[in-house]
Length: 163
View (cartoon, rainbow, N blue to C red):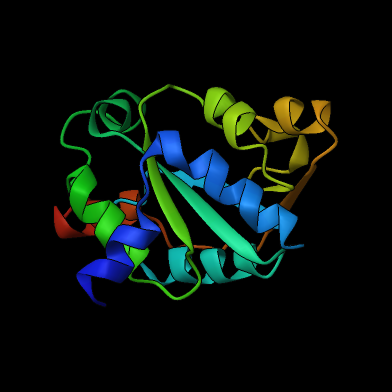
């Protein structure tokens, strides 16, 4: 992927709302998901494809390094934020990637106002963080495929000889 395409897929947070508004005016449905996406594996790829299938444009918000450490513990993330963003941006299913530093996606959901918030089926709709923000402006929340047995945590345990 060229640097131009990578840059297009990684707009500044301050610019992304306007970009998405133009997409909506063109009749496109905006889908949003978020996560750490550390050590991308086939489960992530399947999940992102399924998320993208819920609309026309997929925005992936990625937890900043310090947030990942707070959520996942010491030694995480394995890959720094800039690398995680670039790997995600290289995927065909992903239209935009954006970093966020907050503990929850509430603020960025309020800013971007996606039509659909997607999380993995392991959460269940009632367990999706940010659902109340999306429901408040009339958006949808859905859960999509979860590939059982695949997780970055399990992969790291196997690498470290603990699993």
